[in-house]
Image 1 (cartoon, rainbow, N blue to C red):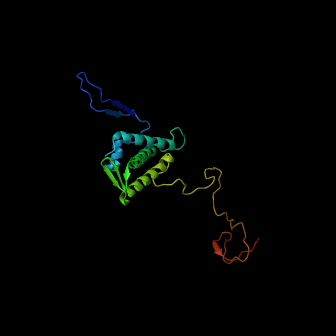
Image 2: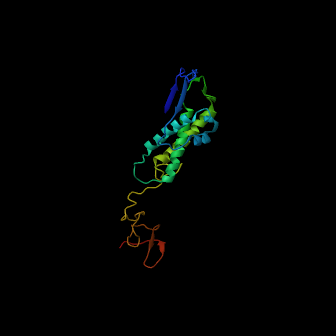
Image 3: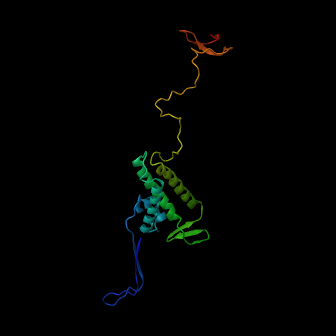
Length: 208
């Protein structure tokens, strides 16, 4: 952020001064920068109407730095790049919005004022912050997973088998003995067995 202060005593060739101190600000190119003030304003509407673009850009930059810290580009591994790009943008939008709406300002009683924006301390605004945080956390998980999960999906696998990628892994079953080769103890009235060339039936079978 570059700030230029022009003293009130600065005069032109005719002797006319500025009369008051003048401040000009601008910023260099932010990197990383995964969103834009326009996207942020489209998402939040009039909530951010009183906050200048320079402030929004700074918040987006800090959110982008956090996204990179969670998922550094130098890390190798499985990545869904298209989903990761979208997730970074979404995360930065919701994270920046929360940063802007929670800026430290003068608070008297239960009212916060940001320029022309006045926020009452009631359930409606609390709901806005909760919704932003929920959306932020949802996209944070996608960023943290390098785009290998979708929004709403957790980190835990739905089903895991130890050694499932082992090419020599045997088929998994109930590990029962084959009744055609193994005789079971008596009584076996409720036990199915199969004779040679016959169908399975209930009954008695002696050990061999």
